[in-house]
Image (tube, rainbow, N blue to C red; front, side):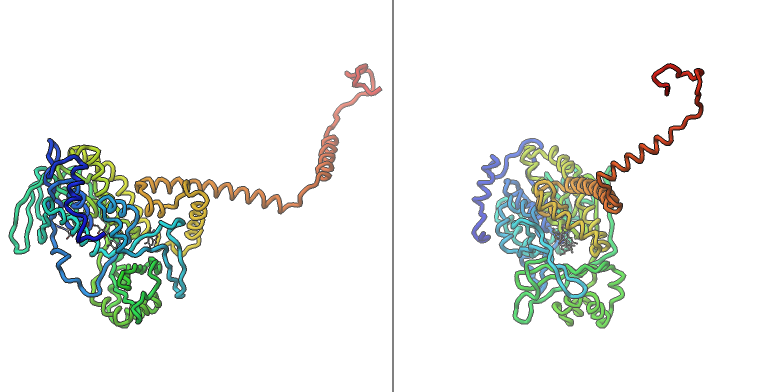
Length: 512
Ligand code: FAD
Ligand code: EGU
């Protein structure tokens, strides 16, 4: 798709005709007219596209500067894995093909072992089962530009930091670049302002609002991994590269410019221990020798010692709406990145919200509670899965039982692709609600537990059968005769008569 030419305002027109609304929607009681989107990050920008295409008046308030005009720090590109749910949402606003064309398909993981050997583990068994490495900044820019195409509907306000919101009236207060405050209001306020959401903070002051958060003990730093001497990819590009090392983990995703972005996950304690060039190099030589060669010693030391590790937080809350305010994306469900689903789940929020707008006639008094009800169990499920994976990655990745389970899962998937879908496949390549993915996994666990019993007991039975000498038909006859004989011998007579006193005298039982 050529973003310069299309989608155009004509597309907005046709979208409005489809929803039966006028140039700017005519509004019934209960239907919002002005939408305020707090945060112009990944979820906020996509959400603006959805609302613009429906013909609403949209104001996006973003704390930072416009990323499209800020200088791109050289050699810094951060990337993400885009999978099915995120793609489905992008497709709904017409951006899927364009975004996919700017990404790099990853068809398998490439596991880098301690002895510098590698092996591949494919993502799926069907050709369309691959994930896509996307430049985060580029994706954000593309979505902001699409939203801005709807000139008469969408206004992007940068340098607007939300500091106050009235959840019931929609009145908001912002601090702008020069430190002055401005007041605005909207019929519907959508908090797409990330893990440290100001909108959620306002909700937390309400009674009956539940909130919990957890920082994990691992931090992360991103290390730019340049192309090799010939300007080519230093490793095969169509893979998600993983170096699993118990408490340390390195993950690398490819960029279009032939570099990789490598992310190191490590406990903060360990980061604190590595403070000199020598320590950093020794650690990498020891733990990730092949990665060190690709990243380059001076590049590594320079990046490592100049960046502070970032923290990772997992947040659950409930509900997702209060009054005329709702939270989407990380604001509602920040998760640790160990399932590659954070952005995908945020994009799914936008898609589901707009499906509910369509089916409930845009009545926010119905849409907001329906949104919470629909998303809450599923968002909580993916938060749990991501956290579980964080623990599992460290403890199980190198155990045989983990690989055995993967083998069994994949074999059964090949045999019964409609019945037995492995957990990560369902999460990554389907629209099955996250909670149902978990439920399905519980069912698979139960089937495998039963199968284990059946196999265990049959093994013992067969073992016994082969261990003892097996009887022949003749053995059975001999055995039967012996048993009969023994029984005969065991028939004992304790009293007998040889005279007519015998009570059996004269009967058929007598012996003369
Ligand atoms: P954000 O991207 O955080 O955007 C929030 C926006 O709101 C920002 O622009 C911010 O400036 C603005 N804002 C904040 N406060 C205010 C305020 N008071 N007023 C106005 N504006 C405000 N997800 C995947 O799907 N796949 C991956 O491979 C993946 N990898 C990840 C790797 C790492 C290391 C991390 C940390 C996360 C990863 N994620 C991944 C998750 C993904 O980054 C997030 O889920 C996603 O960015 C959430 O988007 P968002 O728009 O909700 O929040
Ligand atoms: C972590 C950081 C591999 C990008 C989970 C897989 C991730 C990503 C995995 C990051 C892993 C872990 C899955 C995808 C993806 C795997 C997944 C994790 C992208 C279970 C930029 N994870 N991630 N699982 O299957 O389903 O390959 O920073 F190392 S994509 Cl932790 Cl599919």
